[in-house]
Image 1 (spheres, helix red, strand yellow):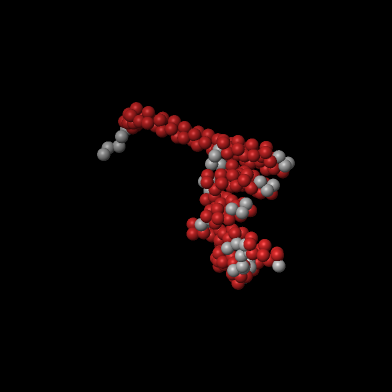
Image 2 (tube, rainbow, N blue to C red; image 1 turned 90 degrees about the vertical axis):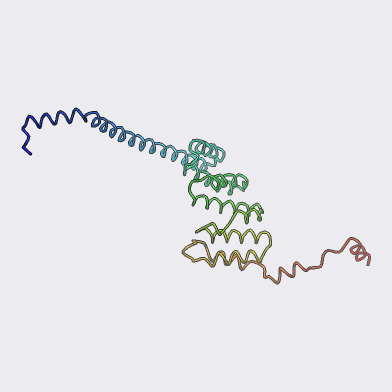
Length: 234
């Protein structure tokens, strides 16, 4: 093939540009648009995160000033604006803790249930479930607490769930079940739980012996009204 002359090369270049200029300029425009869109999305994402953080900090500030009701208002506004925000989840968790400190257990349960049922973070859902069970034990809703916790599906929280189930069974007086749950919690590898094993053992040792429970169950029933009257007449 003969070498092309300068004029021929120039003519080829003009023809190529005539055939492709629209695609080239379109590609450049598309690339610039994508770059602008990505930068805009990043900027909006940053601004949204800053707004959510400000809302969470407002909740913390109000709680620090003992303005619980105002903190609830701030948390609700954050939740309404960004239902899936981790800051909304954290706001509900700190409100639940503050409510427990005030012995407002129904209020605490409401915030914990919101996180347990709606958080996108499985870790936070598990944390909220465990704390809700603790609240139920405080409310003497022992059966509800046991039903709420399924160690088989708890993953790394299984030992904690066993401990909390033990607390619930102990509260309702089922010593055998409480001891079994505490044993399950203590059987988990230490590095997998992060639990206070000494405290769990202390709770287990504080359970009444099985013999004492059996003896309490066989105590003679209270005398009937007639028998009591007869004894009093003697």
